[in-house]
Length: 67
Image (cartoon, rainbow, N blue to C red):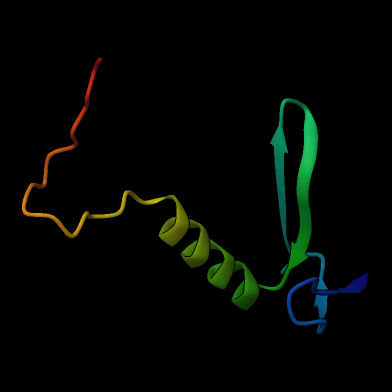
């Protein structure tokens, strides 16, 4: 079976397709069928968005302020 990739629209065989499904509290937030190239792009984007960002300040430690 050859269905289109949700990323680029090209046909992709089942053996090559990657299924990406994200759920929050049991509800599906995202469900995609991706070719290997679009899957690699999705992983890179996910890693970039989920990695901690360095602040532009002088301190590399996180600051916790408790009132």
